[in-house]
Length: 484
Image (spheres, helix red, strand yellow):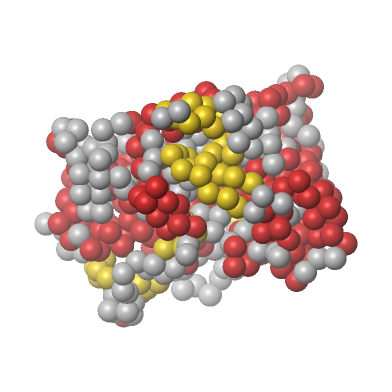
């Protein structure tokens, strides 16, 4: 059984607080919205061994994991968050990335035009992964990965260095899916006390899947160092080819996430500067967390809109009224409440992260004479909460009005913690605002020129849980849209 389906089965069968065993470690599953809110905001933290829930890293790759914003604690986490705030959280920074997003979409649109002209069905999920990997490459590093170019020119394909990073990012995410994971991962999860010995075995006796994962992460580190050297050379006025990359927009030394990190290393107080390993880790997190999750939810949103033509027509009418033929800007994207409501409803139904893992800092009284002891692992079942009929009337229906004033609160939720697709509290996803801008821009660009319907080969949406929760495939028929 898929992990997300298993957790939902537990919450419906055993209540809002239940326990299950994974090897030698008990997990407490919580789907009570008030407990979820408290745990996310105050009483719990990320487990200190959180990266070990996803893979088995050793050597430098493990050290890079430990300093990333996902796993770091204390001052290390605060340093990383300041970089994200400067680059993608502040409104001015977000607005500065919209031209890069729009340029990626301009290169992507000829693909839809060709499918609309030919009538050939389009598997949108894999294409959106290319699109969002290209977007995050430009925003993150200021370079062109060559992935969103569908203009039929015969040009494109990432340069050699870009290709290495693209392949490494894809391999890394693929090996985080349980079916592709090393045999050492379930052992590490089931027997956490033996983790050091398991890592030692994985390092010296890797199976094929472990070797693939380590190679991929090592390539990420190597290409990241090339980018750092290219930034340094450009800042010092040296001639060169930017490490084999094609620079776009502001380039490596412009407004990219890499530039924000490297500027912090160049200036500022010593204690605020990121180390080389921290730069590599934050950059990889930016790319890995930014493209697969966003592609999964936008794919699911297009599926839902194809299933619900009235919603798609209302979204198209909003685009005609607000955008017309004008270029996408941050200001115009902020004037699309129904488009945003559609995306928020897709996030509710098919959220890309279906549970949050936390480590209790103190004993937790869950009522009924039950106490979860300090240092326990708890899973906050956010996906189950977002499908809870006590929180959301008709939870399986696609109703964007839930997120509009016209819903009047009658369509849910009854508790604010029942919608948490980006997490909540201090550890809420730092890229949620950028994901919202990228997703709204993509829906706007695709649907102001085209309409979509489910292709004949598309059956019920099949979801799977890996690093993220997303559809296996979404097949669409694309047609030109006639404006009213």
